[in-house]
Image (tube, rainbow, N blue to C red; front, side):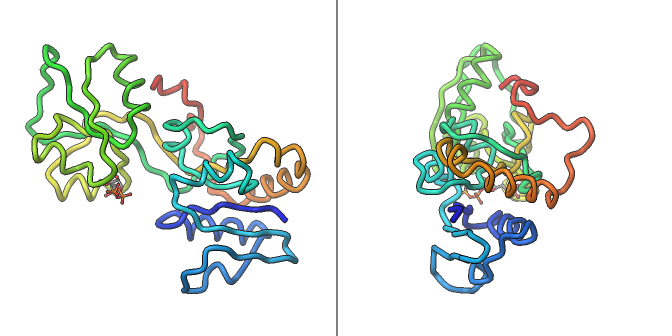
Length: 221
Ligand code: PRP
């Protein structure tokens, strides 16, 4: 069996469909119920639905052999896993956003609200900008509106949340997408099966755009 941690929520259905079309279907996954574990013995696969930010923890500790995690989580928590493949789905970006009339006063420490404090620290550290990080767990867009922060660093997908709260993106920190990751020991012991799965998945992913940058160093975060 290959144990797979799937991210519950927006991305989960797309991710499961990729596995299914790659030859690892498990129809029970798509049933409308509250079960969290599903297996298809014939296909040799067992799926778990987990909170997206927890996928890397399951994989790092070997509770799952492989999983799908956003690049944001991999950059923020740097789990000790192999990143096997850019699935080129769940595409969005991490951006700095602020109220429309915001002007940065570089004489003052910039107050930044975010869920991603490590990414933010590195991003502004590389720019030599003094910041005060305000760690929040959700609804980040509220922070500049209530003057809790000057800017936010958060994920922007459609841009609707920013727009509906009168905020605008002012810088892109890094483009993001979903990545296939593997536990390091599993990758040794189940190498042929995981490599086969990986190449079958690769054949099903939307192709990466010509010249797409997939290396973090290209973005100097
Ligand atoms: C994420 C992110 C933004 C929103 C962006 O929030 O933090 O708030 O999605 O998406 P959009 O550009 O398509 O509007 P999520 O839905 O994960 O909820 P959260 O507030 O708990 O972070």
